[in-house]
Image (cartoon, rainbow, N blue to C red; front, side, top):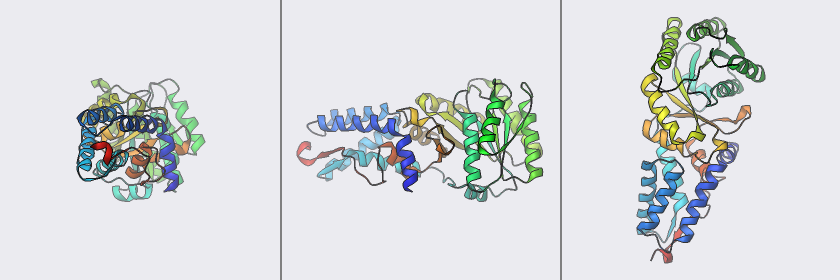
Length: 327
């Protein structure tokens, strides 16, 4: 658990630095916990892209605590509320074996990776393969992005790096046909997981979404239950725009999981909470760095602790009001 907490703390460092600094500034600068101070606290939480609903819940819990406690640990309350909300999501398998068992289908488990251009989807596809292989599973990758320049070569290079074969076609080929061929190959070889990297598409372009549905139909010709998972890869640096993308993709494709990338490069890590709260879609993985092992399974407690720069799930970082300052 310590290793996971360390990964989350380091990967969310920019978000935690901004968030904790703002909370401490508000706490130390306020003579008492009054309406104006609570409004400022709510604004700071919204500014970290936690979402309006979550910010309001945290502020209300701070208000309730102030009525009954001599010491009000604002950071602790915020962390606990975020963890509580994330635990309300549908349960997520935290190992490949659990995922495989939960799906309960014949081999392979087919995971479709979708999203707009620039989210790190191809890299995430390869990192997911690495994680699966580390857990003892066989994996095949499908390069169904036949449009973006160098997309096939990028996945092939990553495939060599993580030790996974890549099924690919030619540029401009039918991406649904590539997915079809890859699934046939995966079934013949008896591999455990097939991860399909698809072309980036704008959530506002209907024809691109229809093409994705065509990939679904092609997979189902080989295996009626496929794809078993459709994971939306979101760029954490885009903040609330990622929420807009998630809404549209979920409506069009029925997204079953979220992967939020580039969280190590942004102070907007709170967007994970905002998306999960609104759409009730499980967060599967977080991208916390550039290395192959920086794609980490989502853990609510580790995320909530990392969001506030804590090394343990119970650590206090000093963001609270004392009783004499509330009077």
